[in-house]
Image 1 (tube, one colour):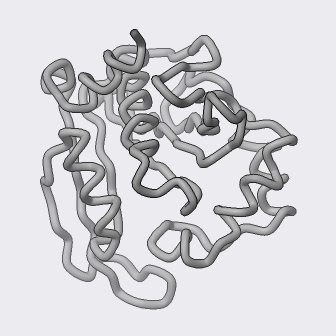
Image 2: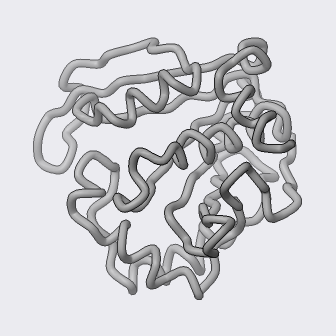
Length: 197
């Protein structure tokens, strides 16, 4: 199982592409924002942390082995502005399992960008990498993320009560999932097909 995308990945209004040094200041505006990071599994990032990540695992442009991640910038096609990033985790070859994650700048909330970018990411996971199952795990207090997962067509499979010590407090975790045979008829696949026309 390998994924070697051709970049940029084009959707109706966005480009998904590898992150570069030129993106650091833009990334700092959302990944450094405590409110944006409130329910995400990392603290607000500094420029130094972003630079280190960009030189490390965020430098990957393909998935060739389990345990790897592919993080892509989300750029507005019309403006060239980086408005967020998405990640595809390749968890297991044996189980053909993966996971998606997403973080976008608060300025673009309500525009459907997260839906468009995550739909493209699911396409990479199912059609590109050949995954059998993709999940999205999130803090149960993150209602916007839960609504996005449902809009994409991921099934709400689990609600784990106070299962993780998250930023100093016990929090509930929600798990949403989609199987490869559910992907073609999903709302996300419809979004991805419409975006590629």
